[in-house]
Length: 556
Image 1 (spheres, rainbow, N blue to C red):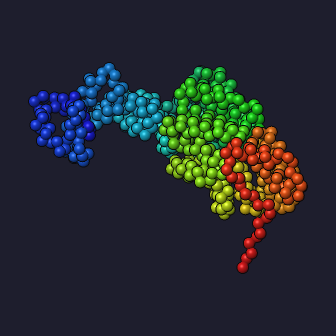
Image 2 (cartoon, rainbow, N blue to C red):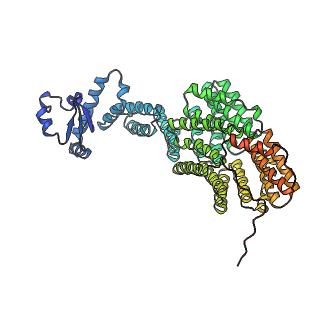
Image 3 (spheres, rainbow, N blue to C red):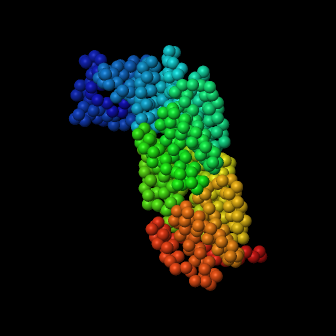
């Protein structure tokens, strides 16, 4: 009745008559099955023995004994009942004392969730829900809260389909409560968001905003701010950066007016991200404030997201040691929160830096682990992102066919989810793979198209230096040296204006190659600057780019 281990103090619960309790002679006789340490703790030596003994008890006796054990524990810990909520929930549930079981299970689940023991929290929330079904006077709002909390912990575990089921069940129990309905509509939008289905996520968020139309009060204002910032997040994920900026500024105003600190922090870091993506990094300065708010709130997941974004900014600005440190802190925060899915994001960020440094084996190992986690969770965007960078590893390693296959798979995945900016990144890396394989003739039309798209669609300004450099290499391979110089000088200009140190260094090396082809002297200090930058960034090798087109295969 008491489990695989138990203390002597609980024996009166199952042997209320003192004369029935085992004496030392009895304990010695069964020592082969149950051991006792000097502190008075007993332990079954074999779990099967304990299980067999338990199964031998009648159902009625089991219920009676479980109830007695629970009452004994309650008397022992009173008034600090919360400390024993986990074991009380178990015994009251087994005793079919559902009125006490659902309350204790709810407390136990909340305690587990607070310390990010998400798997344990799931078990207790499910037990609380099951027990509440047998108690007619449990308020439906309380049961809705149980389902919502169950959805929250399942979402954190990456069990998205089950989380969605829990949120739907919660929403059915709160008809007529617009704020609760809007909150749950937002959470249902999280499910497609986590899988990269951003258009579907927007539909859920839009429904939530419409549900709050005309609703006044502080609670509605706070929820409206949350929905607004998540609408901005979906637009940013789709690569609609200008729209994301507008929605972020609207969310900042709503969050400040409503005193909604969580939404304010979210809007701050999202605004920085969008501003950097459109080349306005000088206006981006909100992330530190966002991080401070999340630290104040004790929100580990929020801290991890901001740190991950700040790491990305540091990476783009050539501050790679800082980026590595922030990625590690983000990974640690997600891990502490029990969120393995989001912990894989900074792991992939670290892998990207390792890739740029030429440490391909280390990068590939991290990417494969991230891919494993994301596949297990059905995290569609993560799968595409890991595949993209594995394609880059293959291209750098000289496996052109595998690189193209992976990069095309990644691009198609991003397109299915409506992640336009990441699809563009995949296409850009495809062009790079062609150039690395000596196929500038195939790369040139694609990279030219990408540059035109970036201008027309207001896409990511961070791609400019890279795309112009790839265009320059392609033109070199085609022996259009004048065009190559124009492209590389534009790459250098963009790289310097955006402080993209590694892009500048790689473009300087490309200019050195071009000078050799043109048989003209290289300006003083060009190669020295490139080598110094590469050394400062920890780059141990750079991609080898052929100067000439690869000879076409001859059919036999």
